[in-house]
Image (cartoon, rainbow, N blue to C red; front, side, top):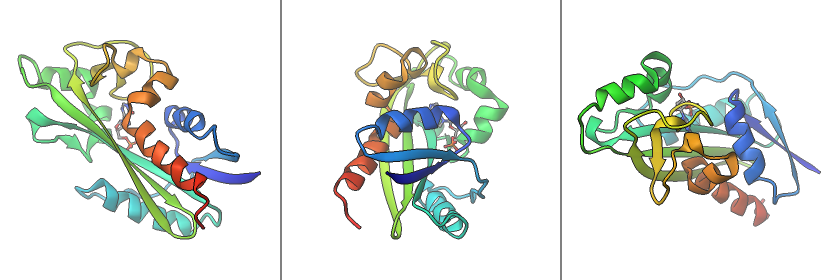
Length: 185
Ligand code: IMP
């Protein structure tokens, strides 16, 4: 069986990917080799740099993923700074920034970078709103404050299978699966 590495230290992301890649006859392996994330405003640029860096070290097909939350009222902040903001002010901090703000629309973007006979990029977007309060305890990061379009529930209130149907990462991984299924070398 063909092996494919997912370079991530995030167990939640790996769980989501494992479910999405189930239709493929591939053994998905989590590996947490550290890699630098350049500071750039474009997630694609960050991911391309990272996959080229990792390709020097891992001589086997792999992918990695970078995502961000973009809030309209905050001019797309935190975007590429999503991790730093989650680690510093967290979900309570975001809710405070949006206190009494009516326009709560936001989107998540996921960029999956595959390295298999060269670099390949897959993008997924999930639009929705920032909730008024913490909803649910599932998932990770901003999940309890993000309600995707066409859903009554936040990501934090969903199972992993449900979240994959609505999420940015689910959509980017779906494109990765289609690409791998097509058998392009
Ligand atoms: P990164 O892609 O691991 O750099 O994630 C950036 C930040 O956004 C981290 O704080 C993550 O926890 C958060 N994040 C990324 N994807 C998701 C998601 O699917 N749900 C909630 N938070 C996320």
